[in-house]
Length: 306
Image (cartoon, rainbow, N blue to C red; front, side):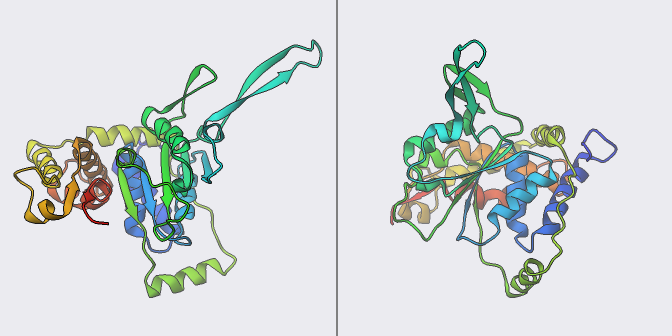
């Protein structure tokens, strides 16, 4: 394992991580890049795609390549907040007979958490996870506990199954830095997937970073400079999605009910900084902002039609 503090440059460490994940995953380069950018920017990602498109494998591979603890929660209608955050149990000392409560930590106490089918659980349980995402801490049994760092949540949704689901409200969707859309592989990629998954050789990823290295990369992303024109460009993109803004195009005024808020501009800049770092550049350029515009804005713009 290496750390950005070693002789390997920070940018090289980020690209090595990308290469290690891509070595195991066939295709899905755009998806891998967007997940990596979300993590390096210190945000969280919503993954939208039908089952069987390697969402879980990508996330597990990322955890193995960074030597981070990975946990998975299958969200169901009967899931309760304590299933996520943890619960108190009563223990009795066999020698003295003394009883006391002990807090058993839930799966949220991990570095990388997969919230599978988050829209299948009621809003109260969704809120327990979303609060942890925002605050990076959990309050339970009268005590506030910090979550391990880095803390990265990837929540999945199936776009074709709506019966029995609880759609995330817009205010909660806004807490996800990126909305990553995962599509079907191309023909050549699908053949490569069949070859790779029906054979005997499935080499595990080699850890190229540790927790300290990921945290250092996240800090370095924050340090990537964004000049005034880049900030103005990001702000302009966010404002152009609002139908009551003078800069909004006619298409937005006609078909958009609510546009993106100020958090979208923050996400554009942070995502652009992470993209610049992955590409080996040390300043934000307009193409970096354009690259992340779709995953940043698509879940923050509410159309006025179903």
